[in-house]
Length: 318
Length: 289
Image 1 (tube, each protein chain N blue to C red):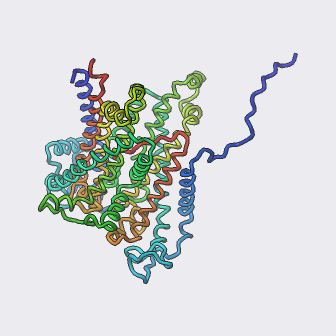
Image 2 (image 1 turned 135 degrees about the vertical axis):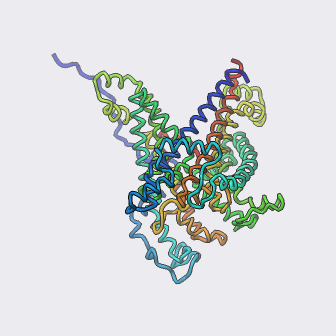
Image 3 (image 1 turned 180 degrees about the horizontal axis):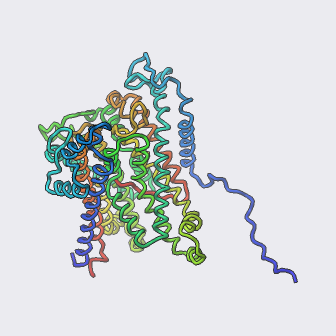
């Protein structure tokens, strides 16, 4: 990696960190400043001014909003986002107990979807316009254009109810052996994976087809190379950058999908925790979960751009 | 001396092309399905075969029958009636949100393009921040802060999709803003509002309309997902997302009461997609998060 590339990558990472700071401001403003006086809401309209003042002090609302923001941000950075007013427990501990389950689900889904999506995307580009390509492309458009919960519902219907291949709605994670673990996680992984695969294969196919329009591919064809050799030996190496970009971007779709999947399968992860927190209006928990999701999302998006920068050969020899 | 005669202009042929000329059969099918669904949404109160709250003597989660065409739900209510009654909520909320998002986004986008300078920079940075939060997450955070009455749901989806529309309109308008006729309009001393409304807007209607169709699908998906999470349209009202959630118990038996509203959503989103594909200037892309 030379200095130009290093500088561009460092710039991109700095932009990512700044975005995260701006996002934290938005999250705090929406949840803690704009909705109005939380103490008033808790006590009702006819609370005495003394009771209100006492409640504000107890809830830490007597300090001005910018000061509360700095305190909150400091807490989040130290890994101590506060106490949940609903359960009375530490938000940090609640998240720590749920985070591994979500990471397991995400990691297994990624491990299962990336190879399938790449293979399907490459085959579609190779057999562009064939019945196979049209079928896969149409199915993937249908999958990405309907809501995720629909895909999950239909997946349960097909794989568990009709074909009886997988247990339907198993609410426990059975980790006594690897096979049992995979079996109990199969439905969530398949549902979440379908959405990611559809997204990723479309982007892989588009990246490869972009390359196939380049003049050097014309040259390869004129030399008489077979279609397979044209795609695999010539187009694919040049499409590695766009494809890595597509993979990172598609993995950021995991975050939106996981919210739905954890709820439908009652999976004990952090997304389920957040949805429950929104229902109970448990603000410190909502804020902390939102920041974790936004940070993960920005990591994926930044990673996608960094892949694009590193893979750009024009920047390599400057 | 006679006035110099104008050379005869070629007269456009009176043969008019139909509005649907050039549409694929899939696009026409999508449009037909969409029209039917909009009619159902408009006339929903008169299309219900049963009283909305009436619990059937047949029992809960009944399969399809002559009495209950789509079976009964988890309380034994007629499912067809529930789906029909949910149509205005499903389509209406998403449509209102799309109008708001695109109206607001287009206004800000035009303003940024015409003004340039610090206003453009400030608007772009502020809306970029909203884009770096996944749409579903932003919606959850707003609902946590403000709750989920219908008006707030419309506002939430509008806020989530304003930046996207802003970006499209701004990038289109920046190009037009550099054209000679805009320079002339400025030299004539036209106001900023005039240039935005009369000079730029008429030239971007096509792409703006195609973008609105796309936002409508996104809004539909987001709102259905929120209702599915129990954070969208609240009981006793129900959109199709809520109906799927309520009847999830029928899933292990493959019950029609959970399949029907799910299929309704799928049919609606795919129909809208087919229509957009046939609009001029359509572009297809994905949505983040």
